[in-house]
Amino acid sequence: MYETLQQILSYLRSMWRYRWYALLVSWIIVVVGWYKVYQMPDIYSVNAKININTESILRPLLRGLTIEPNLSQRMLLITKTLLSRPNMENLAKMSDLDLQVKNPEQFEKLVTGLHNDIQLNNSRTSENVYTITYSNKNPRLAKEIVQNLLNIFMESTLGQSRENSDTAQKFLQQQLNEYEKLVKISEEKLKNFKREKAAYMPTIGSGYFTSLQNIRQQKNEAKLLLNEARNRRDELKRQIVGEEPVFGFGSAETSSGAGVRQHHNDAKIKALEEEIDTLLLQYTELHPKVRTLKESLNRLIEEKEKSLRENPQIVARRPELERNPVYQQLKVSLAEAEAQVAVLTARVKEYSKREYKLKKMVDTLPEVEAELKRLNREYELNLSKYDEFRKRNETAKLSEEVEEAGDGIKIKVLEPPRLPREPSGPNRALLNSGVFLFGLVAGLGVAFLMAQLRPVVYDQRTLRKITGLPVFGEVSNVMTDEFIHKKKMEYLGFIVSIVVLIAAFGSIMYIEQYGL
Image (cartoon, rainbow, N blue to C red):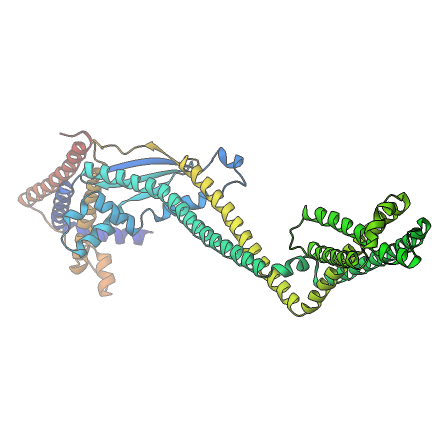
């Protein structure tokens, strides 16, 4: 410990020899430093504080009806991209700073400077409160830049939401129009196909083999009814043949021959005419049943006329025979039976034609059925996609209306930017204090450096340590009065210089604190 203390005292003695150099260096540094600090321009800082609220009252009510964007994530992205280069370039143009530059290098430096000088900080107490800070030597320019940046922030927040919504709506509307065209094309194809294959449509609905089986079953039923009608007709004929001789109208051959046939034909003609009139109420004259019955009616009329030409005596007997009630009843029943036979015959022919057509379609019908199913699938797929895009488009429109109503991200300016009256920097008191301390340290450093470059021995211990030889004695320094007076004046001047330096520092600090 003693050795260390002695070493320190030795350093101080050595440095004391160069005290004036140290004082001169300190003065130079302090004066130059204080002058530089004085020349530094005032810096004005402008702040703006905003609150971003992503909570919504309508959102729980409209859940499932509108698209729910991640507003917190969107807000985080906007704040991170606020100081991006495109925004800084836009800010420079809005503030007319680009008019001061003359080449791309200066503009690049301007944009970089804006990016470095602008600060966007999140409040420690609330995550939804942000502070925008910018400092400049021109207070009006600082306020203008903060205000413009605030406008960019709000426009980007609302604009991005509208842009995303417009982009989504344009895409949905485009897809909706395309699928609407596809639905119309599918409908047209299906309509044309059904029109071209109209003959196959009733069969396709239930399947080919099912339709064929149904036609065969219906034909068999019609044949059974036809046989029953024929048996009934034949029985009525036999009864009529057995009824005529009772009345004694001529010979048995005549009664059972031409006369019976004539009465039988009259009944059939009447029954067919009634049946034709009934069918014409439902069908046209080109209907197969109507045409078949008319052909039968024409044949009966021809047979009647031929019979009358060959047997004129029948006309003379008819009035008496017609007055027989039993005969009349049998004749009416026979006519109905003949009409029923004709109808069932036509029905059997129609079923046979249908069966024949179905048998001919055994190769064509499956292809038609497969093509119809394919067209139906295509139509249903396009229709389902169209309905889906239509619903999504309505959802997007409702979401946009909610955004336009201001229910999304709400920005509230808590503290608008104001024109500062007092500069926020530089902190001249701190800088002057730093210059003063640096000057003192620099002066001590110079004295220490010179003492190390030009060392001096002040005591026996140091001499013994340097030479390694024993020291037998030392010669005292005898100072005269003149020398002592000179040293006193020198010390006084040194102290005065230090006091003046400290006083100058105090004066400067007072001026910075309270002004002139």
